[in-house]
Image (tube, rainbow, N blue to C red; front, side, top):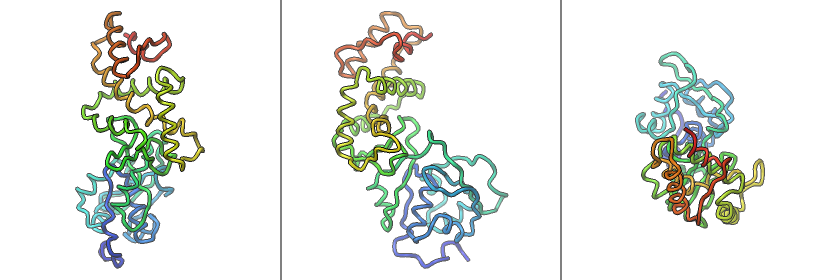
Length: 294
């Protein structure tokens, strides 16, 4: 029996579409929910042999063999190329079956690489029958966040199962819309590390970030205090504008070593871009380390 004729089709259920960069586990879970099934039951119905512990997103991802992907494509009536392009495709850690077999393997995902909650409004548009949360991977060349500029929602930590309302902090959306020229991976890594240190140690921009945090938490009373406080789980969102500003500035630095004049010019320009009266990092400041490291 063909996979796409196994069950009567609930009206519109096949219109459960994947979101850009959605994980396979997330899409499979939402698709199964349209039929009031678990992901394991859906895989069984498609005659796909699954192994591993199916705890579901964001803690686990599922890797499908080519034959399993073909069956899922036939069932959803989404061409294989379109399905592969939409989902966050990652090569499986090991072979998941012999050629031509329909197999799937659930694999745990490390906390540092777990997907983030997708925009709830975008998710509802792509799964009209069930309000099941979707999980997506952030863009690879930006800080680890999800921002939907259309619906003014964002996420930055998988411990929050839903996205956040960011309308009270419009600078996040403005920054995201202007981020057309992506920083280099090296500069972005330095900038993210530096702003994280500033945030944790209440340096330079503490008052601005504290105000931003207050606005976010006031607009999102559903943010749970556990397992970690909003101060930590919202950190990447709160520092996002300044992280991109710093990364862009680091990209413009001349090759090291830098002269005293170059360091002074850089700090003066960066202070202006960050809307600070001055910026004088101490010797133990990571920004100073970046400027003085050969």
